[in-house]
Image (cartoon, rainbow, N blue to C red; front, side, top):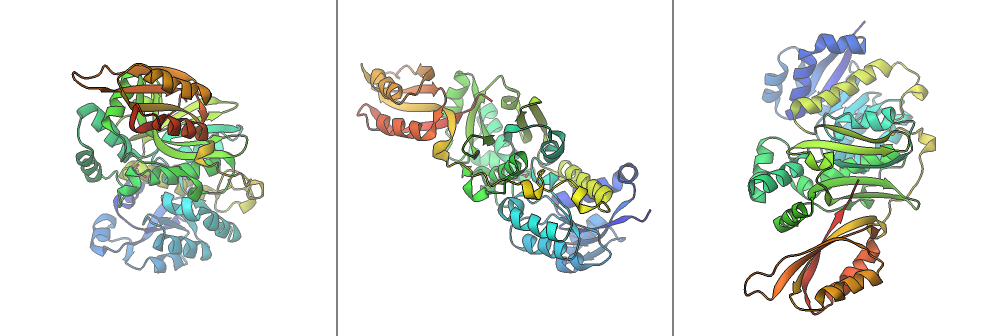
Length: 435
Ligand code: HSE
């Protein structure tokens, strides 16, 4: 059977990995796909680099728009990243009747609704396994493997850079900046690492997970996003003492009034598998009503792990591109006319538990005042530690873990606690999930 022809846009880390794996495993992949998958054209700004990776049998150009128009090409693989040129190229590829594979989580989280509508209008597939958690087939699991379930929630470590930073800071006591540099050197970090450390990359991925878990449109602009730049090592240490680890989690959860879509540092019990995901590894836990809890673990970044996901999409498209579009797997798991306009809940409506650290005067009645406010607010205390005041110090730290409450309720209680004369400065508040 004639090969399926692929045009590759961008031959950096993931593009290079895709090229290498397609070549190395060509026979095995063809046995699965039913025909050879062949990269026939590569577009990259750096022609010399592209030539060095792709060799002489592939057309190489710096004009990506020419590649998406080439009649011979069946599938365009977009590995450029970003929201601007990548968006124009993906829409142009679709307009030209090409199927698209992309690893671009930012593009899909922000412009996915428009891109999938365009793809439906032209009867082409847009596949994006590599966009969430790199080599872990979490899109396939959510979209197909768990399709019997009403998915209740998913929570994941979906940014390797921040997990690497948190692990190194905790294990080796290294400073934030040095660990970030190392993550960049190892190729985990985004071109703009603020996307990693401020939680934006994880929010892109969580947005995509929410859409396919619940059958709702992409609503990235409604996501609540907190990164790890404000996290203090003292809280990592107190959390350990209480039997918890702090991880940057992307959480999507179905509630009666809408869905929660949030990214923030989160305390999780140290004995949970997710708490023990170290370094740049990713992991996602999904809770379905029929299957219960399932866990997906693996490399979320890097050349060949991400290529593994890109090529899985190429195989899927190769198998399905001749099928009647009505009978293909829907882009976002649910049939397009069955998508629901469920709102993303504001963070004030989130229900979660809390870690609260307070700097207080070390004198009688302080604890009683604070616990009275928590009781008045109907916030139940789960655990509490008070650090012994240092020699000659009139202040000390008190740490509370609470049971679940609505965030606006916690906000109000924290404001009242901060107004107490015996409480110094701001209360440090972190969310806690027992998963
Ligand atoms: N910057 C991302 C991470 C790469 O650190 O996980 C994969 O999306």
